[in-house]
Image (tube, rainbow, N blue to C red; front, side):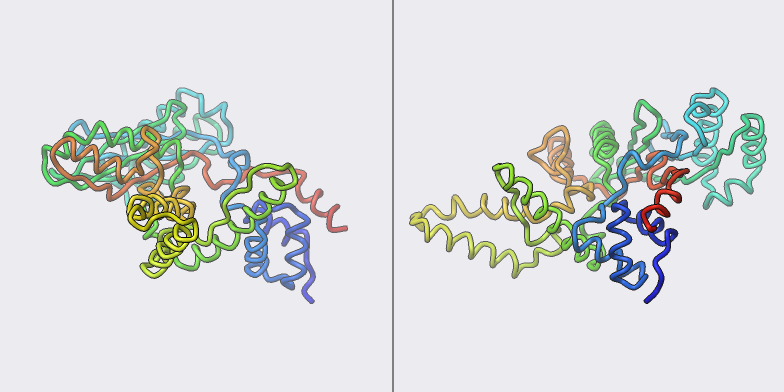
Length: 350
């Protein structure tokens, strides 16, 4: 059997945010196989779907530039070691100038950015500021005459979003810009990671399904102990799993339940659509959390973002569909170093 070391426990905890002793236990069960141990944590509902916000602690600022004619927009994230430096006027100017460099010259990647003439200016500014500062990532979206484009940067300058939508006409594209800013604000708050459930890999959805169901079951154990209403335990978590056969079976089950309740068949057509919609809602929780188009729109929670976009375009006499978005949040996915963690793990391993 492979020896489970403190370093292995630390690595697994960093990857899953699960408690140390749970990490140690599954590593022992998996004979040190990191991938298998990760799956065991997900199956038991222990691994988190995402890092806790308080474990994302990289500092810095985001920047955004939007063309006056809305034909192009760029966003950038630049990290610093401390929040103190992020408040420095020199650093703030560096972020603004860097965003303009990306907007104007569209470097292919960070390496190209640093290799450009502006890269030398960037390095000189960093030396003057006197702290480790790095360009982490950036992106640019462009728009043609029938593409609507807009963006938003949060008041703390740590979250920047740009959104584009394909429209039926120039008139619709122009009219949709204010609404797309609202969509960008929504994305800032709701943290979508992808555009649609269609972007998910089947293996990812399958893995998440097991883990999420286990989490709900554990929550229900506590709710039952407290005498509270239990949460619905879904069979599925994404629209990608709701095939025609699954939906047909769900509809058949709804009708069978109505028959069992003695509801007259002549009123079923008034009940079934709503019941089927609830079934879909209960079984697409992953989509609502991570997919921009499938999230409930913050300004009208009765509609998904996709439906809200369709409604806004219809009011303008046209059609629109969001095709791209970019969301950058400073420090997202970067975990703060914990100086005493190694000793803490070593003590637990002993």
